[in-house]
Length: 213
Image (cartoon, rainbow, N blue to C red; front, side, top):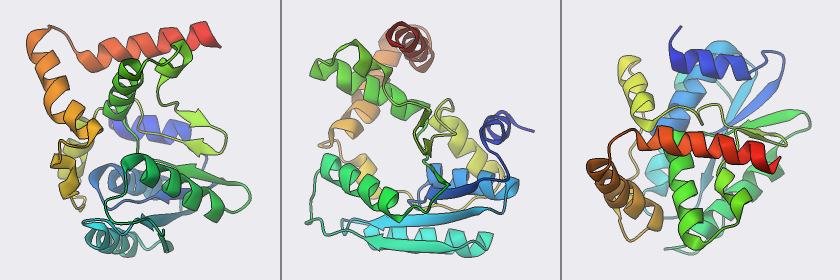
């Protein structure tokens, strides 16, 4: 069993019912494959924000669900074209949580790079100490099984297992704050400072989490 398979399986209970938020991209596609290999009690949901690439990503999500032979649902939001990341995130969580049935657990594809980026965004915005805990692995009925896994490991796993996914073209748009951090700032930091930035920030997050409990 690989590291990523081990981490995911340790967080799941085959008797529970799961809902995977499937975006059609690599993170949630890998997550759904991992969950499906562990339990049959899973379905997927795609939230369509009616933005660039939304219909293509929806088709990707549908095909993934068909290949894995699981129930799939598409939910449309009423966001305007060019909606902000904040608006889309709020609409996505609302749509997903409203769709959940009693006793279901929502699984999200957030990974370690997401946690690092959120840590930096909150830091630069001037958050209090507790805000630096960034993205939690578990909160209420939500679990993020990949939160300790680096993006590069997820991509490699997808290649090794021949998992199909669609890359969202907006990930290259550096006018979006998170993309700017991911594509320009973090690589520059890693170039000029020795050591694994993910590992450094992960350690800080764990320490802050203990201090703020």
